[in-house]
Image (cartoon, rainbow, N blue to C red; front, top):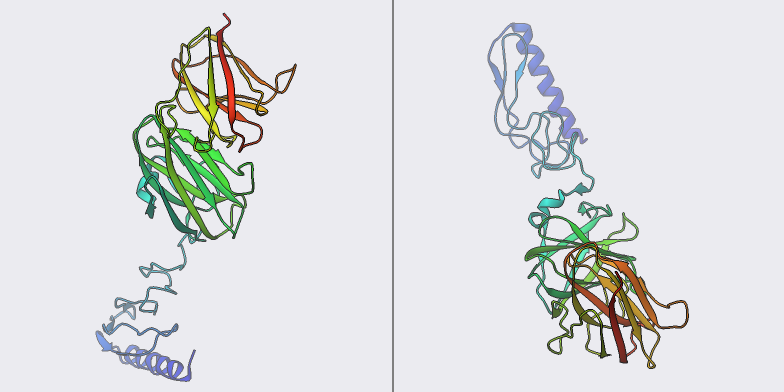
Length: 331
């Protein structure tokens, strides 16, 4: 507090005391342009002294700065005054899109930043920067987040507010990647966050459309039916498998809830890896090696009816080559 501010307050207090002693109702005073306690100016409105000695305060009853910071009780304050929750905001999952400060389109890479006053990611809960994109049901999308400032973490939220995928580390490093077949059309929210829930800093986010409904970027993808064996090939421009993250060729089949299925993948070119994705986009099974060798096999009972996607991949996430896939109904 400056000497000038102190002397003005002393004058003010003396004036009030004099007015009260004389019993003068309605005595007014003004300190136009006087500096406030944080360097702002006090209000130029006059403060009245009523007959009972109470004050009828002006617009700035606590002497807050003109920028709204440092406000005291009874003051409308957009800064971090008393009663202001300055911490992270836990965003309602169903209203995620309205909280987004940025958007990204297919094929784009954007730079963003996680701030200390940002919202928190649904389910995971770490400080996050929400980024939206428009997707159509059946789109195969790849979402990648990289940062030199912190260990990244991704959360993908569907238009209805449900969390459909999360990832901490892709196979190659501590950055994050999600590959997902979208089950809804509308606005998706990518929550860009960190494994350390309080971390802040810059990141890069890339969103790519790598196919449609099990179709790779090179054209119409293969499909398979019960009792069939098909030959396929993993190529360098194929998408990556959900959760696992390795290069993969997606193969679709139609299944009914309650079907017992066995899926087998064999290859002489690489160590195989299988990921089975349900119609709602969730990963329901994965397998690296069956009991007898390094080929892969999944046996499960389907819990949904619709189009399933078998992601034919490799334990070495960048491997390419030819494989055989067999689909059998076991019940």
